[in-house]
Image (cartoon, rainbow, N blue to C red; front, side, top):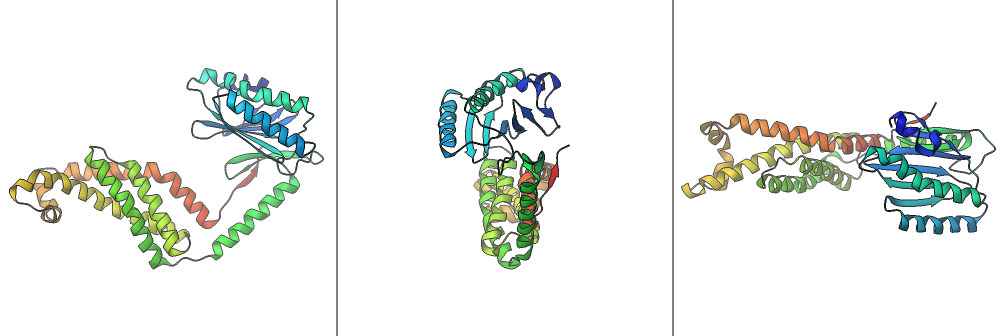
Length: 311
């Protein structure tokens, strides 16, 4: 996750690098550190003595957030603190940034006799291990890990038992994708190939399917992606037709005529290769921008999950 020189400077080098995250025990507190979109998510397992201790901790964290610009959020639950830290633009500043935010919090926890254990129940009487659950990392006791796994299994069975209405869902996907297509045409008119508009098309198509289809299941995700690809084809054709119409309007052409005869116009102007080249680039950019959303939607539609012990 980080170069060894940087890792060794973070919290005295106590956190071990597991490539996807850092985790370990620092001054008696279980800590995990994940990198997500130019931010670090740091979780500290804590066990307050009572509700008053937790309220005082919240007040302290609120003050820290006001004083530390790179501390974006500080959220507490009964047995866990989650910090969101903005990653410094210069890698060499990462240790100072992380240490400057986390060290005062650890010092506060120690001085106020907080302990550390399972991030779910707070126990320190059982063996505590780090687990990766759907890409995020937590220190848990075996009992809480088993409860979470059972909950994920029940959720998976519940999701897989739901069925969607395919026809109504595809209508919803079509209507939703129109938003992305309009955005595609508008951005293209500004002189850009709009991969981000393609991603919006995918998201809106899946949302539309879920609304009218009743549930976004596996076939709904696949159907929404197919609708997205078809609609991008027509959005690209409309964009090119718009440009051609601007040039041919003075010769009496209507937009409908330009759209219907676009293939002929492209052949006559020797722009067929450019047209399909830009379409291919548009598809590639769309897939790059929307891949994460599509993969997440597919995983959620099947209720799939992953949980494994970090060794």
